[in-house]
Amino acid sequence: MANAQRAGRLAQEIQKDMSDLLLKRVNDPRVQDVTVTSVDVSGDLQIATIYYSILSDFASDRKKAQAGLEAASGLIRRELGARLTVYKIPEIHFVLDNSIQYGDHIESLIRDLHRQEGK
Image (cartoon, rainbow, N blue to C red; front, top):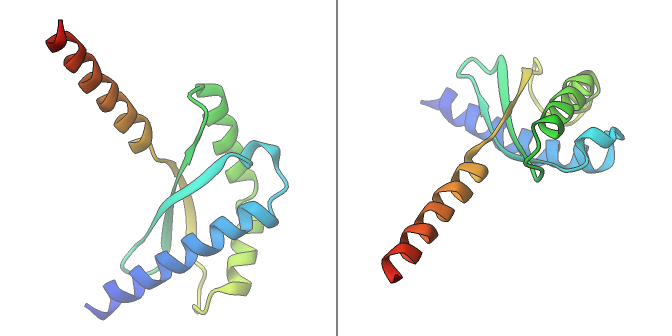
């Protein structure tokens, strides 16, 4: 139980620091529109999965953002190492969070359904 709490606290800390790093330290134009939506840390604190979203709907922009994040992962881990109070900095993985696009899709389906009912 205590390890799950530690993982949760570490995930919150990483999310806060990631947002700050993307704004202030990572100078890659490919990641300028990236927003960190959540972070999951494994129970053994070895792996941090960072979920992010991007405002663009273009697949090419999503690929560029992923490449930019992976290119900056060394800098990000070093910076996290200076900020976090853990013995070993977790390995980081970046995963595109599609929940926003999915929510928009569901919302448009519901609007279309309401329009059809109105006719």
